[in-house]
Image 1 (cartoon, rainbow, N blue to C red):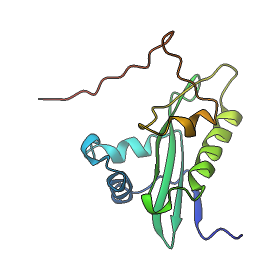
Image 2 (cartoon, rainbow, N blue to C red; image 1 turned 60 degrees about the horizontal axis):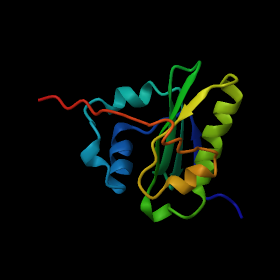
Image 3 (tube, helix red, strand yellow; image 1 turned 90 degrees about the horizontal axis):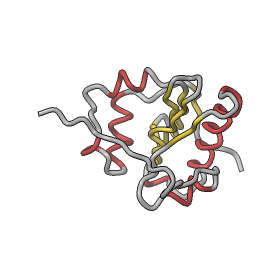
Image 4 (tube, rainbow, N blue to C red; image 1 turned 90 degrees about the vertical axis):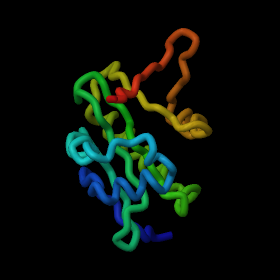
Length: 141
């Protein structure tokens, strides 16, 4: 079966495309779109998928490029979820880390609720209670 979409490497979405994708999965309340464009441009690696010139999925890697790699913003528009495109994005991201990360690189991610099983297929493990993933969102008043 031929692919009817275009895979773009190291071509992050535009701010408008990013807002569109994040909003399609209900993340707009959690995102600061005022600075998102800078964040997208500072990605270590990104992959985007377009169908009929419309952004339908993205994923990226952020970090220091030496020891720490974080998979970020794996977003699939709801109309395309379950089509296997998410697996393709993750395979591309994991291949990048395999080829560019050193031995014992720390690779992290935060899984949306209910998506843990998807990431476990890529050997991501919840290490609790021995390790606790923690984060803080800096809310300015």
